[in-house]
Image 1 (cartoon, helix red, strand yellow):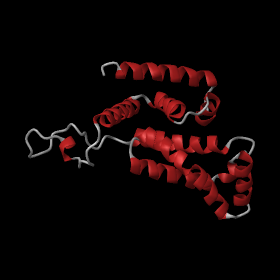
Image 2 (cartoon, one colour):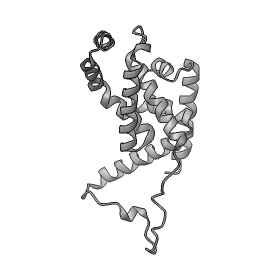
Image 3 (cartoon, one colour):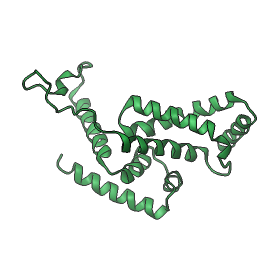
Image 4 (spheres, helix red, strand yellow):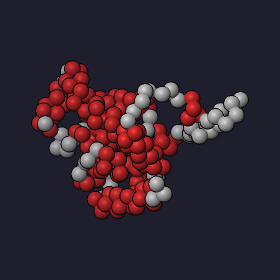
Amino acid sequence: MDALINKRIKEVLKGDQNAFAEIVELFQDKLYRVCYRMLGNKHEAEDIAQEAFVRAFINIHTFDTKRKFSTWLYRIGTNLCIDRIRKKKPDYFLDAEVAGAEGLNMYSQIAATGELPEEEVLKMEMQDRVQYEISRLPDKYRAVIVLKYMEDLPLQEISDILEMPLGTVKTRIHRGREALRKQLSNM
């Protein structure tokens, strides 16, 4: 796979833009998932993933073909996500009361998508809660937790993506898990 990617990168450097389209096709779903899990918002994740590909295309000449392209691309996407998180302020809260509607909150404004079996609802609630709790983690823990447990990346690749020593990655994963455990302990 890496040989194919490196071949496509050489073609891009020679001016073949279609070769980059093949690279995008190979990585778009994975990069989107990383961005979505870090941001928790479909539209922002799509924007950031697209921005990461644009930056990768513009800076493709700086890519070292001795390294994994996915690591380089995930680093770009992760850094963009962290920048977005730092700049973003919460727009609204679902448990905030709706103006002019006594006793109703924003949850009541969400359209129902149909009936689901009780087990599926409980599973979805648990996934949402875990995703919410991950989003509450400090940036340094959130990034390693998403890359390790959501994307199943090896520790060395996470170390390369985040440009930090392997020991720091292990420490942050451990501390991030502990923080998540504390946050989820009242369930």
